[in-house]
Length: 422
Length: 186
Image (cartoon, rainbow over all chains, first blue to last red; front, side):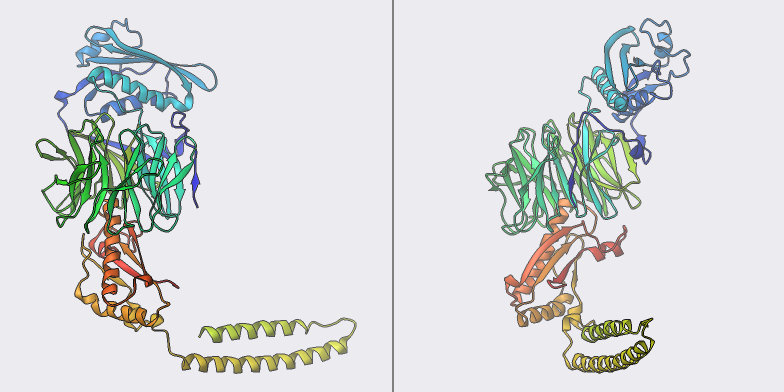
């Protein structure tokens, strides 16, 4: 049974029941010396009811691995006004910036949230915004605040307001889920009694391609996120799988077995103009477009073991990129096109690694038993991946320098194949 | 066996119908008694006929050859080819079993098989889907070389999506790296 659900990406529903079963742990291994110290003052009027705002801002900033938190929660009353004479205390404790704010109810359903980012040394305002929103959107506002703080202090756009998609299996039920970048406020896009696989966002986030076994074999669908309407993008004889959008959203690379073996093809996003790119008896799968659209990375075992290759996105001679080990799979370009994340097998364990394309240098970022499906954040600073804790499938985030890890544990189901969207 | 069970079931239903008639008619006690005696006689006759039919059916079943596909002692009861990690080559131990299935399929041109490739749960979902397809293709090619027409075979990969054994240990993984030979009627 299949049911497509409408998902309003900007109006997020209440995730309270999911929240209760999801927990996050942040494991920071990097040196504190390189981080920018920030103090977040408790927001005036937040009480316990609205404390989620500063909690989420703090968790987002910590997860970035680039900021550290300075505790000023003992100041009574809290710092609220930019003219407060006690800024020196935050400064003495090492803070370079201070986040101040107020939350006030507008009416029964809406609240007004105001915040300022202050330079702790100059005591000047670096940024200030106010939001009026439904009380169910407090987490969304917190992610927006974290984005502003992160961008002002690091010069890099924040990604906390973005969304992720993943597959969750509960018993024999499969769900295609969409959630906030921290894994919270999850919503079901599609539910099926047969396997769902390989979700892929369109570059603008308006559509999703994925694989469903509802017809008894692997078929690629394309679905509108706004309306839930979908169509079969590839339903040929055999397996149809591994969809990947071109950066301009006009084409999709995918893998078909209809002509023998697993071969990479490219098709226009409306399903027309199918073109085959690979040939031969080896496995060719997991195509992934370079940010300039000119090159596809893919996995092939043409040299005897699965390795990562690149080829022109119009087809042509592949070039092998990975040589260490006998199992390197699931390539995913960084947004700047200078490196790619992949899965490497070492002594029976599967880890997330990054290769710098120019130098060929590889850095292994994780040390789980079975880490899979790496996907870069839109700003290139973090990598989302699937990991295992005991027999449960969890999601995790690692900074692209490997210094900060965060794991999202969800006892509601087995999560895998996360992918980072807009 | 199925035939004789069916006959016994029918006999049971018939007997049930007959005993419905033994309900006493309040205004006609004698007629009821007569009807009851008649019904009892009919029931006895029906039981006897059913027993005879069952015995005949039993004789027919034992006289017929057992379908070797359903014989647990036949080599055809072996339906799975197992593989090493990241491998799709068939080791020699499966040759006798594949020869037996090939002989059956060649002899039974109406029989069709689906070859279902599977993988253990480690590594890439998509690479495993492709590997499962190759494990299915590998068995198809082996049967093809044993003269089974392609029209009698189809393949599908479930990748790592439908594990037979759960758990993260070599015993479970080994169970899941396989191709199943599934006859179409099954």
